[in-house]
Length: 233
Length: 241
Image (cartoon, rainbow over all chains, first blue to last red; front, top):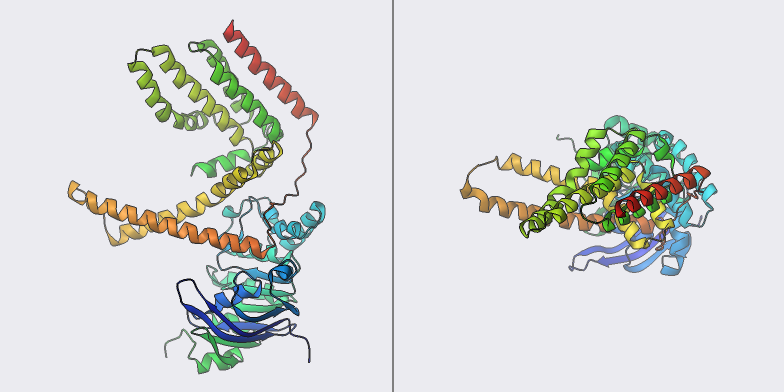
């Protein structure tokens, strides 16, 4: 049996206001796998992924690439897990696109020339090389999403976590994103409400409800069992 | 928006745009000191500085009238103090206050309009301006646009649900609604700040802002600085005579 990239056992987390956001979550991600996290708003999906790189700390066992998610491992773990946030504006905080993409590699200790080279390479990969010297607020929603992805890919992660990646994207933008993600070799976790998007990329779906994993299987099976479809019959 | 216009201006190509941010900041500082210490009634010196700045605006290829107009944003503030001086019987001081504040604002605007924000931030950092201050400027500039857009969306939503009802009777309700909107905007900005912090931490931020730009001063920068300081000093000394 292969070593899992992510292994979570009995994760519980309560917010300061007393809300129990995660109530004993077990989860596993294997190399090369793409898993969709489905579930209603407020079911704990985003709270769960924020535990994977230590942005939140609950009770339970969380291991990434065999390492327990603890402060002393944050440096390594945050290079191995690339987290693309739902709000691109929150992720693009540097004055120019190129500087933003190079932010992670520079923090990881790469020398400036190497970091710049890697940033240019990643912008090329996601198709926004032309925007390198632009300020992030001059970009369209689709371009912002691509730049946010480039910023994460520049750290050469083994795992990509994307929180609602299709938000604000028009259908061509969503199609382009599917193609782009499909070609990336990393294992992926997709937090999404979009079943079609999940189906086109994920081999497995995990369904969250009230802070628990209540169903698991192929995307089609889970969506059918949970009536997780926007269409009215 | 003002900062979008400034952003466009700052990406021009001219001799002034090409100068290193550090020398522009030092030249600006020297000019501001010269202006602040010029005696009241030194109209000729101030006219000289104004003429030099207008020349620089034209040299930078910036549109003269819009630049002069934007520099006037400082006048409502300085005019208030000028009126107080004038009422207390010190007319020369009142005139000097207005003149100096306008020329100072124009010089600051000229530097901002010929230096892109990343260069300006790096220049300030290189000149040992406290890092915290530089970061605050950087974030304010970056998120001003996002937050103002959010405020515009809220105002639009509010107008959709409550068409404008003119009249003095509604002012209380409108004031309350505006105060509520401001509170929501503050809460959203706070939430966004937390999101940004998480995004920074997720990419390995440990308190130090990295930069890969290592700029070197060129001969042109030294020539510019020497010329700017000499002219500033010459005009200032001329006024003292």
